[in-house]
Image: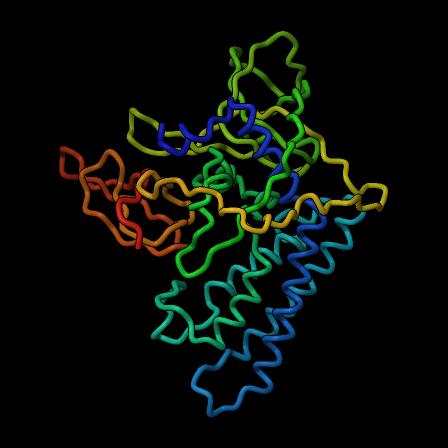
Length: 366
């Protein structure tokens, strides 16, 4: 068990309240409306830059990005129209808010492709001032964890639940991407209790029956088919809450296999904690509590010691720096924030090389 999991224990009542609150915030109409509003401001500014920046200016933006940028704005508008009615299919693969999130990621990784600043989807240096001003407008549409409601392609064996442990939601260091930092949320003084949970239980690969927040659990009975009542069965938490959209396939969850020394996506049981019925009457309640301002003079949340930061193969690198593969004798690698953490080629006793999914440990931040 890594240090982040130890620090953020999903059996701790405070941790459970914070994760539950964050998932409701990240799937709220108001947060996605704010994402859309920020993207619209960025779109107008980008178009203005394309049309008005003099050709003599050395820093130029790509006009070919405009159709995609406007397409993203259109997808936001279509998705929000449906979400306001309580329809959450908009986060499924191919649907408007899924596409808005996916396409905006393409713009982020290809924003300014000058070879002095960019290489193969990775930012190498701080952008020039005018480019950075546009970049900041784009980043205003991003929130840490805003992929939470998106459908996961269950057919991809390497993909699992977005959150296997809560570290990347609660650890302030995870909000730092090297060349930019996303704002850490301000929690209200009193967080509501997490619901006890329902008697609805499903397995990875089965169809999710209702939109809502689900908890991965382990139970003492092996053969459970379909949606069944829990009755008197004993259940134990086995990871971080996730938000699942109805009619998607319940995802797997990442676990470290000590026998193979690999992080693997394994099947699990999911218990419904909270059914999301917001907006079905067409009314969006006051959600301003999700966007509290930091008190004047308040300190930024204390950061976890960077040397304790760990992420797994396939996850996004939260901090630029030097990383080593935990439990393996391999040379450290340099990874920039925002890139996907790689796998590791491991040579067996017979000299054969095999691919291993590993846990990467930050030893020296940039």
